[in-house]
Length: 606
Image 1 (cartoon, rainbow, N blue to C red):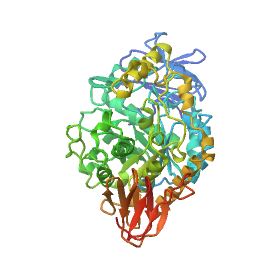
Image 2 (image 1 turned 180 degrees about the vertical axis):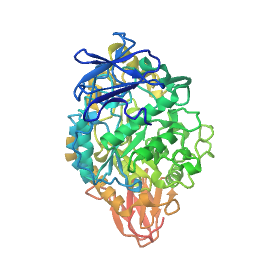
Image 3 (image 1 turned 135 degrees about the horizontal axis):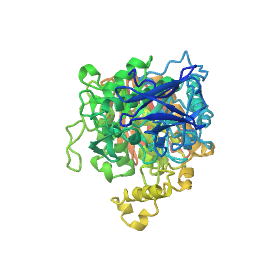
Image 4 (image 1 turned 120 degrees about the vertical axis):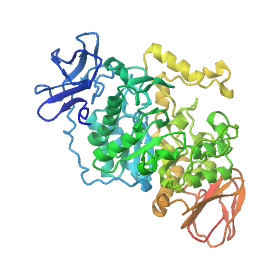
């Protein structure tokens, strides 16, 4: 991508080169913070550029279109927006940071344990530097990768991140670009990889100036829940694709990200000859200079996402697989509305989901009577499926931001945790899950009053189809995304960890992740493990050297072959604040309530 490889303001140590795609205009100029104006020159493909030796890092600037002072906008590829998405962009020297990670080698995919976090609510400081101060906690926990929710700057001072409009600029409320680099460098020093969540399917509603530069950034032929789709296959799409790929490469090159989580790839509508995801994978592989993992969030259960190009796939490394989450929610929290209606949540279906990676493979019929979605998973590695009990969507898209452990008892939560962390799929934890955080994770925004009112009303209307919120008066109790208290309530209370039952829950996570490292289930191929449902409420996971039996509801007994050595139970006194011991005989495990047992043996079989 030679022409667009240095979008924005690029400082090479001697001068700054500006480059912006604006084919719809007859004149583009840079307006510096001191009022000076510098004219750019247009290329045949609509890029405007020029180099100026006296413009240096720290200078602020905007682009003026067609000589119209009223049409002066921040840089679409700005590296930093010190005054927010509506303010001037800043020239930044990305090479000034002194990295110490030259010898860093990221964990391989089978060894990843993801920890998803929102920078603004993860710590009291809500900054990149605040995350650095908590890295040692994550190392002691046993996670190997942090996944940062979207960092592109947004309108206001608080946001989930999925309303970003300055896609290339780390949000100024979290810190300066070098603060993000310091976070990545510090994580690498501790053996922790860093993934960045990127959003290429839409932009936020406030501060999006792309249309001012070129209307071809969007394609009205394709409509998404957010309006016209990002233009990936229409006129001008070649340069739009380049813009997005350059964004991906910038996180990788300038911030040393080890991977990207691609938001809602099912909403990347592309009918062109080479799908955008395939091109992105190809360009990252060619330009990154090292292994970089690309993980899709996609609800279609499509093997094509992760199949290699030689098998007509896009070549991504892994995909979020939500079927496990949905199945266990139905089984233990008795969810039935919305997309949960597609699932029966039986122990047999949970076992099938863990065995296959996702449940729907294109042949099933959902309980609603609708045809099953998805494709078979034959030939895919279990570690290519990222599974969870909680993530930002599955908590924050609930009216009250409730986490799973707010809806089920601790005994059930411990049993489900054991399955999640010892299954061959790649596990993802959501911040605070490891100690059963008291804080919810609500949906929050900080838009101007007119838009903010629309956001609040729209948020509440989303729940009108749910029985609990059919009454408008009940919907009015849903926390207001615009209320600062909604944001503050979502911040983790780190002192929880010192109190029971949170202290014991944290110990459980540490013990299980240590076991995961020892057993290495992520390195197993399909067929090297088995999952069954020996009873109505039990799931048994058999690994080459361990047996995991989880009772998910009520009391029950599971027969096993003799000879197993107990390694862990979820009623051990150091992991259960209200221990109710599980009886383990030679041939039977008897649960008085939900729980799990891990036995280290190749002989014990359910």
